Image (cartoon, rainbow, N blue to C red; front, side):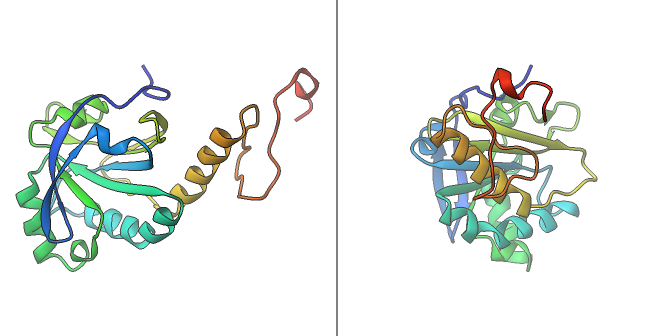
Length: 187
């Protein structure tokens, strides 16, 4: 069953952000665009490359009104330890949510129950707290955060322009489509 179009389920968690521990809940997602980036574990191999890449695109995402949250089943204390000891993770300024209860990972359907770890899942959430895009990768396949920028722009465009859709490889300013009977079989 797809999570697309579903509202984020209630949660409350601790996170590490900019040298302090903060509280994050589902209510914090309301009124802004959000990206949730789930990953298996701190002090691992592919994960730091992905999270650093996400940090490298964080300013561009913030300019689009997007807040970024990374999530693993580690605690917020472990996030701080990793942040303090890793050159790549030490660059991160977005919230690193701890999910030791596995509630958030389970809510987003990315929990690998056998391992107790989250799969690599990326979610774009609109200002109403509704999931608009989902990408799930196997553990050995890292993600490219640059792709998120156009996905967010497309999601924002479609939200602001009901009745229009963005075709493949759509970029801001390029043509969109207005689905209609006249287009059937002509694309």
